[in-house]
Amino acid sequence: MRLSQIKFLVELNKYGTISKTAQKLYISQPSLSTAIKELEEELGFDIIERSNRGVGFTKRGAIVLEHCQTAMQAINGIERMGKTGEKLRKGYLSVATVPYIFETLVMDAFLELKQRYPDTTASLREMNSYDMVELLASREIDLGIVMISNLEELTFQQAFEKYNLQFYKLFDDQMYFIVGRQNPLFGREMASMSELVQYPFVTRSTLLNQFNRNVMMQYNKDMEFIQIDDSRGLVKYIMNSQAVSMMPSCSFWKSSYHLCEDLHAVRIQDLEWTTKLGWIFPRDEQYSIELEEFVELIEERYSNMPKI
Image 1 (cartoon, rainbow, N blue to C red):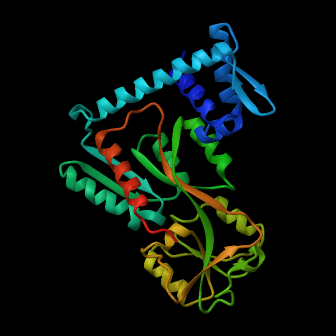
Image 2: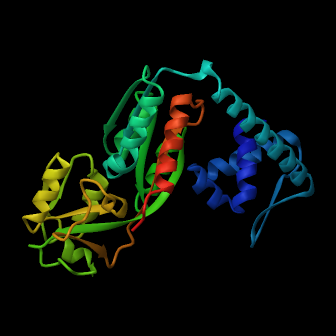
Image 3: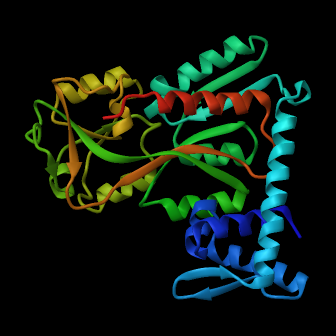
């Protein structure tokens, strides 16, 4: 029996279906089913049973589940004991993040962590989520704070499974287009994608990936893309042109992108474009003290952040 199989059964009991459990764990449904089937073959009896209402546990499977839940509690307890020990301090921390929460959540947490551990070598940089996955897979960074839209969730799920990464969600969010007063859509509550992509799209290189570009070009193959790699310069350009940009609502918290009377958020009318923000970390590695406390600081700041 593998530790991953124990975790799978505990999570399956929590979510009730193979599909939802696989989605929450960011693995494929076949991989989850195979892992459980292999365990059943190893034990010599069925653990789960499927019905129209979802997945349940057989009588023997329920006993296995109880042992798995006990085992997970013990494992979590051991990990917590280890994380409080000085021996697990690495002395360094490398973090990459999407820009949207850089100033409002990540930077403050980063500064406080440096105050707690002034001798820790730390680095923090902005980049898009796809690049973070690659760097984390090669262990060039310790933690990636990513944004995953509903339109590309399967792509990320496959990448996380390929590189043995775990995603931990912090919160869900909604995507908006941002326009200035010179744009005819200023003041509109909603607009269609066909309307929005008629204007130049201005962005930073860390905010745009090829997937988002392809989605917009489906509505306008001649769409103009402008890159400005400075957050305040980007905002100024939007305010003084008809260009549009796209951001999640967390960008409107008090930061460089904070909405003012000269900027307006337009919701997309004919395309559900939501997103979730969270962090990714290798499944087979243990948190260092610095990394664990950094994550806790971000969670604490998010819980205290006034939401729109």
